[in-house]
Amino acid sequence: MLIDDVGFGASSVFGGPCETPNFERLANGGLRYNRFHTTALCAPSRAAMLTGRNHHSVGMGGITEVATSAPGNNSLRPNTKAPLAETLKLNGYSTAQFGKCHEVPVWQSSPMGPFDAWPTGSGFEYFYGFIGGEDNQWYPALYEGTSAVEPPKTPEEGYHLTEDLDDHAIGWVRSQKALMPDKPFFMYFAPGATHAPHHVPKEWIDRYQGQFAHGWDRQRELTFARQKELGVIPADAGLTERHAEIPAWDDMAEELKPVLEREMEIYAGLMSHTDHHVGRLLDAIEQLGVMDDTLIYVIIGDNGASAEGTHQARTTR
Image: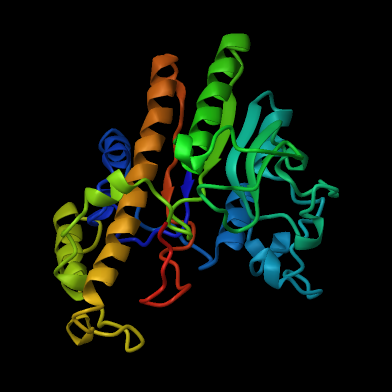
């Protein structure tokens, strides 16, 4: 499971303010790692993770949208570098991917292909999700395999992309265990959250109302202290100085602070909403009786917090 654009100090499992009880549930019953070396961009991190190789060696020196003809930056994976899913499939695994695929060269991302770099051309027998770096959480551009499909319902009817991806993931693993109970499976679950746009049902945002009134400078101090308590950073670590490009909370105009607070509430709500649906998938695996035989990795942040936008960026609905 790979969560998009999450900073090291965002989720509660690593001391952050975003409540993620299901991530904590996994950490408390397993291991908590704190040295995932990202490439600072999503597509290269994902390409490295999905192949087990240096991102330049699989053509992903940057995101697909900035590919050039230079070696290591052309966004084309050589056919000599097999993806993990392909290796597992050839060794008897059922394989499926749900969510974001940002490893397809831009000029190959239309419904006409070619599809060699799409999930179904990269070892995944089933794919349900979107091609590219981000998608609208309410009105996504979805594909099943290599065919464009419409969302099953509208936002007014309760649609949200993360829930839809989760429903398909749960349905797939249940079918896999019903029809091939002795066959192992490899699932890659990569929701669009918490990448922008930050679309999340209002009730999840309201859970955090007023919790960020102290502003981002104080939040850094609170998170830092909590991380020391958890032991995910050394007890003698020092808090880095706020970067000059980020204004001090106290310097922000009073009429703007409620908007900035709301932005933080929206992000936290989206993070908790994502954790909730990860929990649904974990419950399904547990109900199938295969939890003890299933190795689960949750990577909370493919490249750390996003540097896109500004402190006044608006991504609400």
